[in-house]
Image (tube, rainbow, N blue to C red; front, side, top):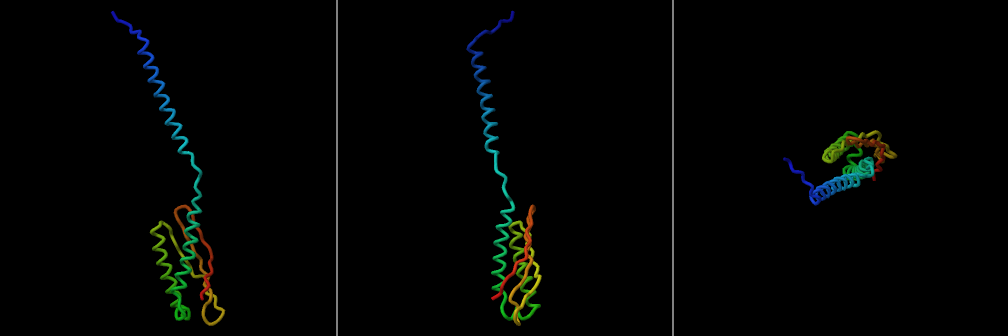
Length: 138
């Protein structure tokens, strides 16, 4: 004959174990929900900040590379400009950005150029910024 167990202490222990297990599961779900609540990140601010840095650094580098001899010879000006673009393309590629610059116009108020109009472009996987920038040469 089978004997039935009717030990009330054992039943209370099982019920307490089930309740503790349910509380642990509920607490972990609540923790996951609380920690996963985030504000969406505006990724365009990252590329915008990088573009601002590249725009100013490219201008400083061009200004250092352009001498009066270079400015008086259009072929030499294009060579220095293209070399500068190549250097910045390489530097930005290391940060997973695609950089490009196009010399749109050379403005001269006297015999030598005074202003370079450049179309700068910076891209990443999601966003792209392109602007015309004027570099004033001293």
